[in-house]
Length: 527
Image (tube, rainbow, N blue to C red; front, side, top):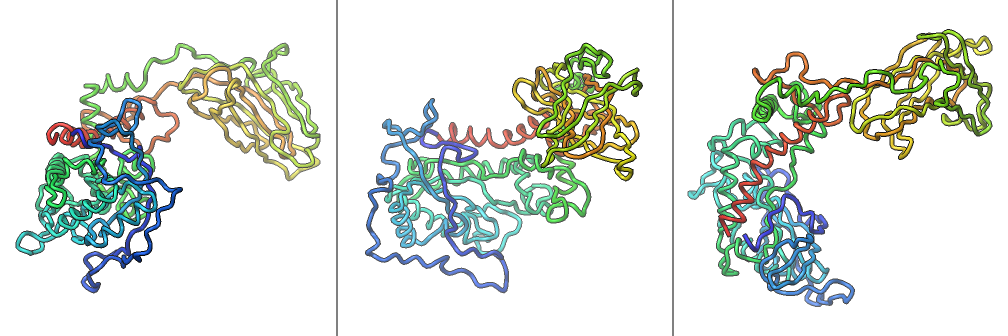
């Protein structure tokens, strides 16, 4: 529609969240008293001075006509006026003030320089004072089975409040879906067991999406007798915000979309989704992958990619065999004392290196002593495995000192960006240490062992950096029986980037199945 900007977020607006009411937490508590008046709002008549330092508000809002976003990303009115919004947020029963209170609030906000108010949490099912919707049917009886009964009293209050905002020059950002939950009789599965994750249903259940689509039609088609306009035609309603918060990507990134057990579901332990919702996501994910790739073979090929033809060690002189090599450098600083000594033997050939540490600096730091190899060249986003052998030299002078730490660090020699950093605890026995990492910082690398913060000689050998094959389908995974596992979070080192991309794109597809039809409804159907 021409006078509505359909957004998922209010990224183009500046809002300050301010609590505008005393909130009744237990909305249906039989022992609580109904709130007759949400808060006292009696502004003194002398409180009318407007500061010259605050933005001057143009009234009424919407005077410049329908709004749109310019190619440069600016909010533009139909007459060419560029608008900037500075606003606050109303929620719960503060969205439905008596007209006299709404007028006082509108004047106060305008005086303070606000020209926009964001309306959220306006669709509670079960808290009639904070919702366009009523828990009661048209006969006044409680109805737990149908959640979209319109509340004419609340609509009338909002109509007058919208008018007062408009007269004061304040635009309205109207959220279309905040806290609405469905009734038991509306054909939505598991509506009674999802607790605070009920909003996932809009992304997974077509029936839920259709009910919310119909509600958007109802809300924006409402005729406001005070302004003489439908909400859809009122340019003072600047933004129709499709949904408030609740992105699937966020819940995935914090590990809440995979069921663990009943002791870790929402409200307990790890706070994950319940078994049903986790399995629903599993099914939809496997369907998504099957539609995209068609077969296990195609899926596996996409995740593995093209294996690298380079199979050898990418580091020069990783085993210290070449006495003429310039790949290794050894640095001692800040008054520490140590030497880099060739030694016969080692674990893989005839030579290794001993770092003999004589003394530390006055304030020991791990970077006071280090050995670096600058030779390996890594490819962007490729997977690698760094291995080396190390031990600590035993000293009769310190017989109880049999362990110490070193720090292994791989970073781009040109940008300094890190690919790998980890402390390693070594002892008096030769041991192999291995790290898998992905080269987010490609190009020539500095692979460094830091050891300047404690005494104890360090012996090093057999450094190697090699390409590591990507992991495709894991054992037991198959599209044929819907067993391809969803990742628990995006921070899993060693798994293919394409697998992570598919997970993100899957979540986005669920959200788009909800957003796009409503965007089309707002822009096309309602005009």
